[in-house]
Amino acid sequence: MAASGDSVVVTIVTACLRDGGGGSPTSVVDEYFSPAPRHPLSDAERSRVPVRMGTSHAVFVGPVVGDEPVDLRFFTAEGELPACGHGTVAAVAFLAGRRRDGEHEFRLRVSGRTFVGRAVRDGDQLRAAFDPGPVAVRDATSVETDLVVDALGVAAGDLLAGACVASLGRARILVPVRTPGAVVALRPHLDRLRGVCDQLGLLGCYVFSAPTRSGGVVARMFAPSIGVPEDIANVNSTACLAARMAGSGCTELAVDMGDVLGEPATITASVRPGPTGPRVLVGAAAMVVRTASHPVSGPKATEVEAPDLDPPLNALDDVCGR
Image 1 (cartoon, rainbow, N blue to C red):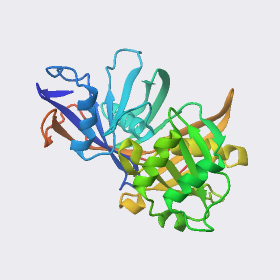
Image 2 (spheres, rainbow, N blue to C red; image 1 turned 180 degrees about the vertical axis):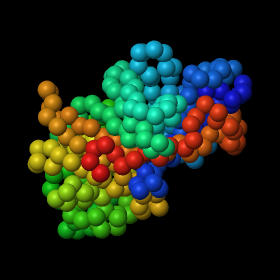
Image 3 (spheres, rainbow, N blue to C red; image 1 turned 90 degrees about the vertical axis):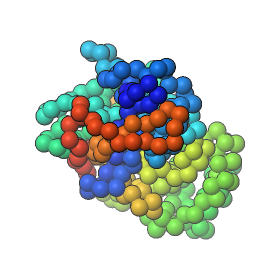
Image 4 (cartoon, rainbow, N blue to C red; image 1 turned 30 degrees about the vertical axis):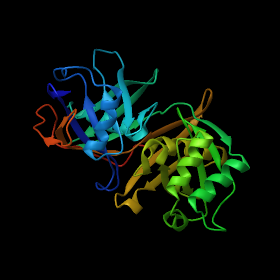
């Protein structure tokens, strides 16, 4: 979405709010509802958008044409990602922000996969959810676990059995620890963790506390290999955790993240039997915060009017059971 020949308009959507606050600011660029820039953005220019907007990720929203799926692409400072869960939440909130009351459904396409994102709006509130797709899960090897745990600095006695490698586009390792306090206390060696993740071909590391009887979890996601030392919220890793926990009978999760960063976030997930394995449904609260003009080649972003967006939206607690 272009503001002028050498800038694009970026909408900041805070995804995965908890009780109306916190959450992960996400840059959303609409590539359809405004005149095109002088030239299509290169991937290098796309990767600069989250850096200059002060967000960890950016999602680029393609044309909305009839019943055709809306293409989404995701970028961090290190380049393009095949998928991004909180970026998808942000995109659904952004698209729903153009609509009035009622329930809205959007066909989305990410990395060639088409799926549905749904949003229910009630006044200035929004409920959003989507199926992130099939999750591939395997047990982590002892070598993988040892290397990652050492770089994370997990205290002796805090590690639980059951680390796994799971993928929704890219593999990441999930590491269980005994308590929420053990998650909060982590002080990982980020340079070492990046080297380990690069060596093992991992997106990053998702550390989580043992779920409570009601499915409560505290988690942190470290992904220095993609330019995100710590993610405020990570929806796809939460989906991976839900798929992993389904075998133990835990079918509803409410995962709190971001507290260490001062941005409390919550993601919920539910699991149901599917024709080819567990079917996961995830989502999170979202709010359209502001719109700014982003110079493609300049260092600053300038706030601009956003006449085609409704007033800021407050997404309700997620449809998945919070």
